[in-house]
Length: 343
Image 1: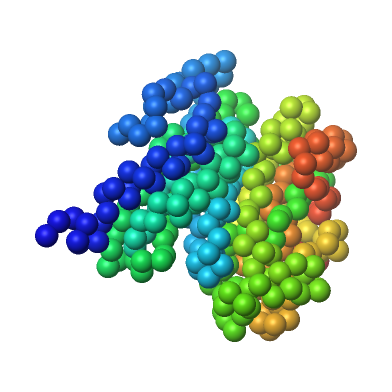
Image 2: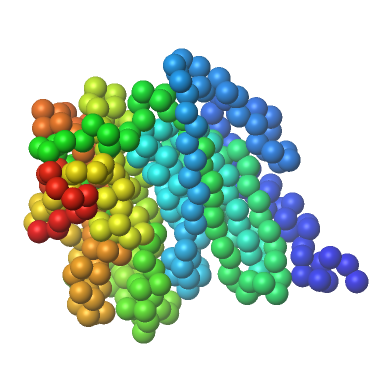
């Protein structure tokens, strides 16, 4: 008896590391110390130089049951982007710059090419965020996960000068809410997605083209989460002070928007201020889902929201466009009980 007969292939683990090294190298920053494969990832604190009062920010998350679609489609090179996005977007919406990232992959059986494909997506997400992929873990866990399945999670660390923290403390009535378009469902609410499309969750079903979507169902559902780090940096570089910011993740509008507000103000969102992607309308109709539940579960086409002074709206819109994202003026801040009104 040996470890391989027990279901853990150490040699496959070595091969996975070798295959992923080429992707990891592409994420390196000058502050990264040492090579790939050490017991810990070393990152120089030189990244904090020049800050009056440096503050570290962190975020951790996973991809969730969106992975089930990746299994069916046997497509594993984009879920890593989702994993990075869910973490770095949280860091960025506090005003921070993501510095480095670590991933964790747990699988039933280590297929080196598949693991390398997953890490390829993680590396791509890190490049989009400007963060270094300094380490990670691949755990082969036979008997715990089915052989063809895995879980994927990650952890990001960023930094911001305390004076640049986005806290919402300066919000006031009249401030304008600018939203940035999402790429679709992102990586939240997929348990409901899978229930709605239960009959379509086959390779053939997900490969079906829908005119109303303008694409195959699987491609729309598996579209990776937008990473908004560059857009938020572009706003800052334009000289705009972001008063408050909200990453629209699990819990949709109703849970996430109040997190950016201080007591005594509420957000008013105009539903007709932007075009809701057709996948959401399709889901609502097919699943007979009430509108309030949709807005309480999904991003409904807006992945990040910033609150700015009315005088800064044009500069904010141009900065977001310059970063390659699509902005919309979607509402405003009013006096009242902390919360959100969608009308």
